[in-house]
Length: 285
Image (cartoon, one colour):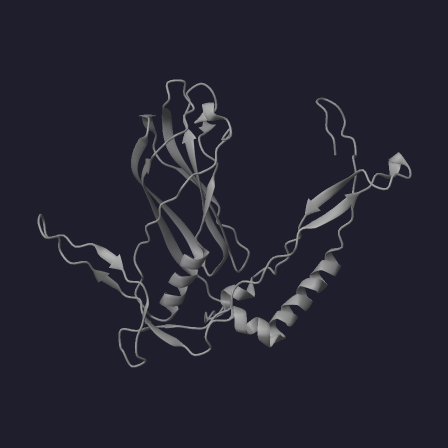
């Protein structure tokens, strides 16, 4: 459609997408991928369950200064089957590839016998309401469990984009949680930190967000955006948003609780913002 200012919309072109045909193709591909021996040999991990050491350990104290120890996470290492410290990692299959990108012609019957007025580049994403792949290896008895996701925003460094004329930002971090469980109930919430005034190359927050969800989930992610606060005009987006997936962390927490294991502890992650409006213009840096 073409919608000029203060005018009615005009149809440019239209096309037809056969959803049933694409659904049947997707189901046929799933059956083919599960039956082909050469494909399974490439995408499935070893069939025998392996034992790995995945416990958290304490680092040795520093040679000088206060005797403080930091909790570290060990890289998994193969252990004998009888070792009591071992953690069982079951075999799994990688996620299948998505539907291919299609190029469909656009038609407009009002223009007569013109073969095509353009093309539409698209793909079709099809999935069940509750993705069965998330249930693999989980003893799901139909009862969901309530969890808390605690996010601690510590600091922002190496700021290179400024929305104020004085090359500074009144910076704050905007977070958008998007989460849905197996019952298709959504847990969406928008939060933000306090504002660090006159931030140049760095900003410090030490701000904590708490989200309450129910697991297992079909989707869970946190969208993070760096914003510049303005008093008179609307707030400006400093960098393009970055989406941080939480699906695997929530699933792992659910699995460990079902198996009667202790929580794995906190996860530290550095989020890198690489895109912003006017990136190709050197004056915007």
